[in-house]
Image (cartoon, rainbow, N blue to C red):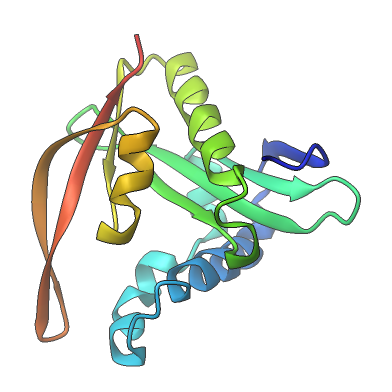
Length: 159
């Protein structure tokens, strides 16, 4: 169950490096080979400019101020809102923090006028989103070095 000492608040641009660390640690949780992780570097690097341009919220321990997860949503050229990032530090995976961040992302997406929220996710996390009410609507091939893998494309209706 979610720790009552966790709060969700808007991320500040100067926290970009901390959020990049959270994303990196969370991705490492799935034990990808080092060469594959290097291909994720650009995607896992959060910039202050990105935070300024996209709704980005973090979960932190109220007592310690430790950032334990975050998400960002982004309006793509297709006029659809997408979860661009949703990461939880390994020590808090399975505690409910990810679910709280996801529900918060849905609420924020609704406030900006989204009728649905779309997700291209790591295959390891597909089950989490399905459990949260998303449905699979397709797949996208991703080339990572010399390997190809299928990434699930999911969507959750907000109304």
